[in-house]
Length: 166
Image (tube, rainbow, N blue to C red; front, side, top):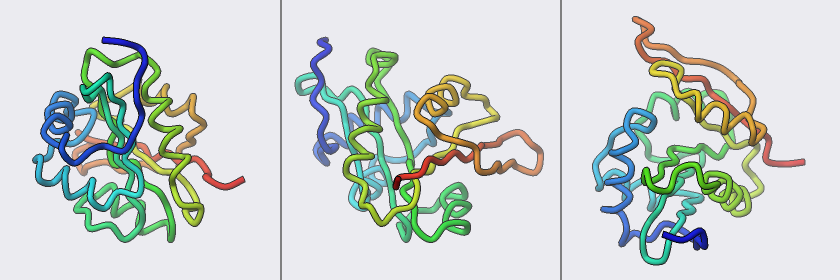
């Protein structure tokens, strides 16, 4: 394990490794199949990944408006914004957390998101809580733009956004 990471687009050949990482991060990210993850990657407007040599350390998937994506959170964003870049998920292998890779993946995504998108939007779990993710996004300049809760308030998210232009 080194600290010299290559940041490049997630390779479709690494979907199985990405799936293992994703599932190990549930409930901070949603559970899905490897096939669904591959479908999201295929339509991603940005999908930076951190590699330690040939080992996938983590990845970020960002979708634009109009994606074929079955998600109440994405639907919430789509109903409120005409153009946007939506962070579907960011996930890291446990051995690579807290090493500054989240910042690197977000910087890579910001560098390649087409300029027509107004803002970068994500959600962070309120229930079950994810305070580490909230602190991380606060440091990156994200601000709350809304919340969504289940009827029984067992699950909830806060939507966060940061402008992409200006």
